[in-house]
Each structure stands twice: as C-alpha cells, then as structure tokens.
Amino acid sequence: MIPQKTIAELINRHSILEKDLSAGKIEKKLFAEKSKEYSDLNEIVEIAKKYISFEKNKEELEKILQEKNSDKELKKMAENELNDLQAENEKNEKKLKLFLLPKDEADKKNAIIEIRAGTGGLEASLFASDLFKMYEKVSHKKKWSLELISISRSEAGGLKEVIASIKGTNIYSTLKYESGVHRVQRVPDTETQGRVHTSAATVAVLPEAEEVDLKINESDLRIDVFRAGGPGGQSVNTTDSAVRITHIPSGLSVSQQDEKSQHKNKAKGMKILRARLYELERSRIDQERSKDRKNKIGTGDRSERIRTYNFPQGRVTDHRINLTLHKLEEFLEGEAFDEMIESLTLQAQEESLNNL
Image 1 (cartoon, rainbow, N blue to C red):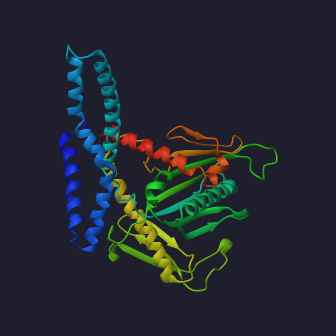
Image 2 (cartoon, rainbow, N blue to C red; image 1 turned 90 degrees about the vertical axis):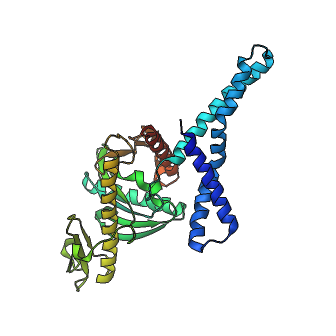
Image 3 (spheres, helix red, strand yellow; image 1 turned 120 degrees about the horizontal axis):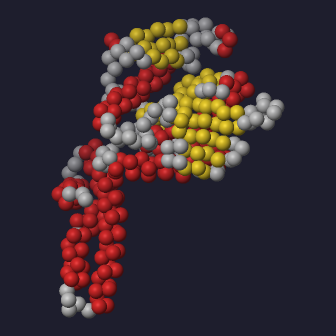
C-alpha cells in the first residue's frame, strides 16, 4: 500500500503548479519546466484522488454489508460495488507505483548505437548490416534523425562495425533494451548443403551525453593523430587526419578516421568517448543501488544473449521475457519492433515494482 501522505503530496503539488501557471508571472525557462511537470501530473492526479478516497468509500460499503437490517438487494449491490472498487483500486495502485518509480534521467536523451559483427565470419558481418538496416527503418518510421558516425565494411556488403547517433523524442528509453548479443540462425548464401548456420552481432546503446552531463578534463586526454588507412593498407588520406583519443584515468580509447578533417574526426571521437564515459559512470551508480536486485532486463550487459532471429522458422525470440513473434520479416522491416519493445518495457516496470 502506498502511504496516504505520498499521494496527498502528489495532489498538493499538482494544485500548487496549477496556481503558479495560472498566475503567469514566471520566467520562460521555469514556465516550460513547470508546464512539463504539470502535464505529467495531470495524467495521474485523478487516479491519485480515487486512490486516496478508496478507504472512505470502502468503509461506507462495508457498513451496509454489516447492517443486519439492510435490504438483501441493497446488500448485493453493495457487495458488487465493493468488488469493483477493490479491483479498480488495485489497478490504480499499480499505475501510481509506476508513476512514482525513480525516473531514469537518460530516458529522454538521444542515443549512440554501436553494432559489431561477432562470431560467424562473413555471415556475422551480413547480419550486423541487417540489424543496422532495421534500426534505420525504425528511425525512419518514428521520424528520428540517424547520423552515421563511423562505419567499417566487410566483403559482400556486410559491416564489421558501425556507430551512429540517433536523435528524436525519448530515443534512449525506446532503444536501451537492444544492448546485448543478437544471434541469427539461417542458411547463408554461400552454403551449398542447405545447413543452418548460427552467427552473432553485438549491439550497444548508449545515452548521448552533453557537456553538462559529464565534464572531461583536457589534461585527462591523450590525443594521437595518424594517417587514415583503408582496406588492405589502401591510403584514404594523405594527411594526418585520423584521431585516436585516450581517456587516461579509465583507459577508454576511441579512434575516428571517417572524415577528411582532423577537427571533425576529433569532434566525432569526443561524442563517442563522452557517451561511453557517461554510461560507465551510470553503470557504476546503478550497481551500487541495485546490488540485491536481479533484474533480467535492462542490465545492459553486452555479453548477454538477448535475442535470436531464426529465419527457417520465421521467428524472433527475446530470451529475457520468453517472447516469440512469428513475424521475423515484419520485425526486420521495423513493423513489429514496437510490439517487442512494449513487452520489454512492461516487464522491466514489473521488475522495478517488485524491487520497491
């Protein structure tokens, strides 16, 4: 049961914000912040009022049921009403608990997605390319902006590695459950015996950190410049435009050579480095907070096998929630993506509620 004081504070906060916004004497930035908070509370305040009045309504109905002289028909009506009231209260309590869960400050951020071919040679690189195309299609459908940061191609149109920045609304909250090992089972084009091969690719989704989120001291960085090289030692650029940035305290290192400008390569490299350092700090804090928790979802463990794409059976299975969709083609086209994400989000919320 949620303490009545907590619910009363929520209702009171909504009332204060309503008065402040009606007065209209607030600076622009603060007005926007309070408007957003008021809008969020608007969705839950009526439920909060029903929840706080539940005990009183329950007592009145129980009084009717306990009265010896009460009409039988009246008692039956009161009993039905009490059952409905208790069922509604259980739903309201769950909604309120979800609303009161600590918010992940990164959920509203843009994201950096990194996809790397894993075990399986050429087939793994082709699968990495398929995954990237899927995220491109999801981004297009949701009207997100996807910007390529770096790309390393393999033969036959595959990808050894690709890093991209995705911008839009609530990007990280949508894509954060994609981190982990994605496994594919299919017959490669090069397979003459028709045997099914298993390959894998890893996906890492990082919240894109701004300078205000994480301060990086220049003195903590070592920046090396070198000449960019293409496949097989082929020269890409005749100037020292490639950049390697090493964060000395953490040992994290980022290399960037896609641009012809050293300045642009450094800017892209810093974007990736900042995101990785921010995620490193978030993981450290999260581990301290949740030492006793055993959440299956959202751990962000890149070594964890999270999903299997089985082409012969036309299915995609998420192993964290044991959900199988027999819509593999639609999923890779971005059509059934939301169905999977919504199920993962609901399960993650359930786990968070159980840990309260």
